[in-house]
Length: 225
Image 1: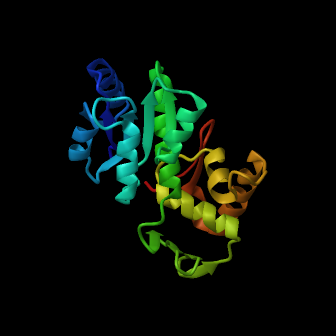
Image 2: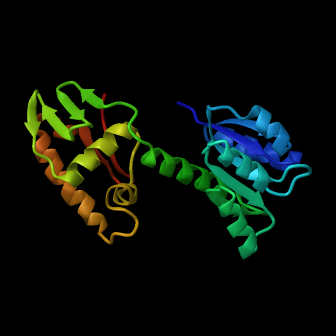
Image 3: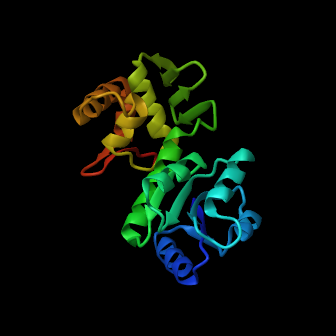
């Protein structure tokens, strides 16, 4: 599914270049020239806002604060020439998730957008209580995995890796993605740890071991074709 982004900036040239380059990356892009217009255009389908800070009328910081007070937690990346330490802190305290200083490179913007969307996706709770592919089933409420009706004994980490891969399938997860999600950013483990757990997990899945694919140079994904 294509992801929808709202670009908010009072400079038309910036709106145009952001829209053009993001659409080239496959995103659906809506634009607004002010915070007031952004409020009227923002819908639930928007996965992220690229938000200028210094605009006439309501500032980007104020818009972010309004959205958070309404319990709207759409990810926000601020775009601004104000990049002092206090400005950055203000951006995060008002509800921003990331901060890009102007002038910016489009490569950096696209990389930040993709990284933030990925973090949000990995942190999202499962949308269903059960996941099934042919004879492989994951029961999330009971933390059980069965193969052809027979329960498979997985460790907590193995279960979390399998659940994570299933939730984002067929997207590829890097080893860093898996480490951050399963072990946490503050727990020191090696990339090789993921490979070891994947090897053990494949053995336990038996005839479904082939579903976990290593895309060389990228990471792991579930091949459900």
